[in-house]
Image (cartoon, rainbow, N blue to C red; front, top):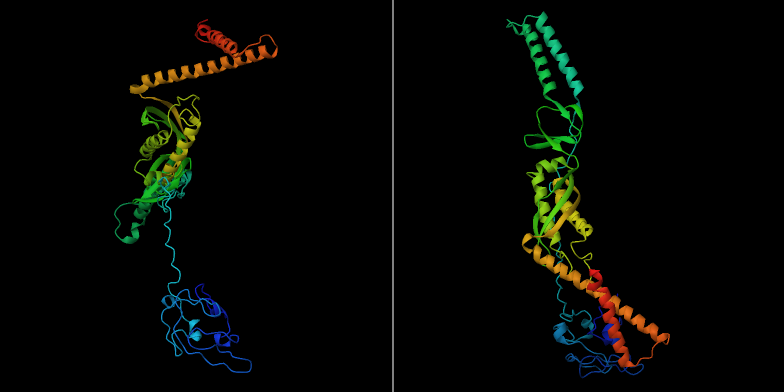
Length: 408
């Protein structure tokens, strides 16, 4: 096995052979002695041990010896710098370790997890057709009537004579249980069952249904519904006050979460609509009054605004069992206190945009006219005459396409 190769300890320490087996004439690390080898056929003598070289000192063979400050003191029988033990000496503090770099923390929007309680998941409750319950109730009633007709129901003298009363009581209990568990299942509605505060399941069957009469049955509307919000007060990215109306299409997907995961899922939906509308509409300006018309970076792009609003609202309502299909802004208009000022600003922007387009078309027409006249040789103009012609044509074309043309 090769010894540890440290960049600070070079020379003989990098070889597997013993330093005493060096070629003839090599000097050791100590002072005042010759190397282990001598002339041919003459055994060499060990050199007198000395002190290790200082940092940066080279031996006669050119080997750089590490400083004892890095290796620490080495106590050996042959001296503090004996070659037999230099290879086994640990190198401490040779290279400083780099400081750990802090891990960058990325901020992400906080949203609710998809599931708040893993045990609160909708599951079907046991139920059967209610016609079987009606048949059982009819048979029990008929049996109790027959026993009461043909048997004496007076107080029995002995326990053996009490069977008619027990039979009639059992038929009465069976009839009450059969009739007490009857429910009418409606299309688009479901029954959520809870017993002593614990969720027991959901019944989505329609028609006449029988289920256990003891749990509490709560009806839940699972149809597709839409909700139109009231005018919401929001501001855009520039701080301008706005009024927004949002239309939300949604339904209850998980009845257990909608009933037990939140106090009122409809009120929760209203609050989330207001919060999501404020968050989405505050990211973009309502209008762009620059030279270009309003592009996709403004609230006039209702498709992009609706997609972002739907995504955010669906992620916030998924935890309470509410599925949001779409959330679209119906109206996004300025608040009454700033509507007049913003209308004047919009008209001024439209007028400046119109003047710029008219001036561009006039300049193009003048340039084309002058160029065609020069190419055909109709006129020969110097710089002064060309400038005068361009000025006259610009005034004539702009007057024809400007307010006078609009008035006609």
